Length: 294
Image (tube, rainbow, N blue to C red):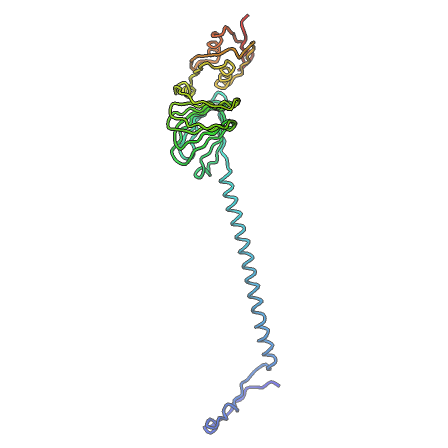
């Protein structure tokens, strides 16, 4: 039975004899059983709510951490593998500046590729054709090709790599040249050229004049005891034409000569053909044929 609030009178004698506490009654709107059930429910529900909150918070923390990790890995892979490709077509010469200020002059029909966003960690280039490199000092600078690898810290040099040939001329400083098809390593100094013979798995270092190697940069042709088919191939690259050689024993023709690229291709062919008593005819636009005189 529920009790209601009522006033209780007391006097000094009640206080003296301790009867006050006996006469005081605390009003409740609920019974003891109801109050106990309410308190028990609150005590049992709080730990569950707190645990649920902690589980949910930890779940979203893991999701956020995973998302950040994926983003970082994706960004890292992008920086690592994003590639810049530069190609120089036939009949062209182009220059390209690398992220560190190093300069590459590409000869006709040459190409390079590298990772610009990873350049601060690793200065590496994949290259084919012919090019002149002016490398700023810094971390090791590597040039990879099918025929060889060239390593420097900071210097200038020229690389020629076509078919199975690999030649590197050092204009300044020192460079290290390693063969990919030959188990040889060379240290090349200023004014020296290394030539790798992949067929015989050999190599040699020789002194050579810079103008004989770098003439292409000044639009000059300098040929010293070169097979005729290689001379005609170089003309094809520089003039963007097709030249057909129709002759017997073409390997026996060895050419030495010097002339400017500024002249028309017909003039260049005329110089070369006169040396061997050959002639040439124009078949169609940008296509020529070299034949033996009868």
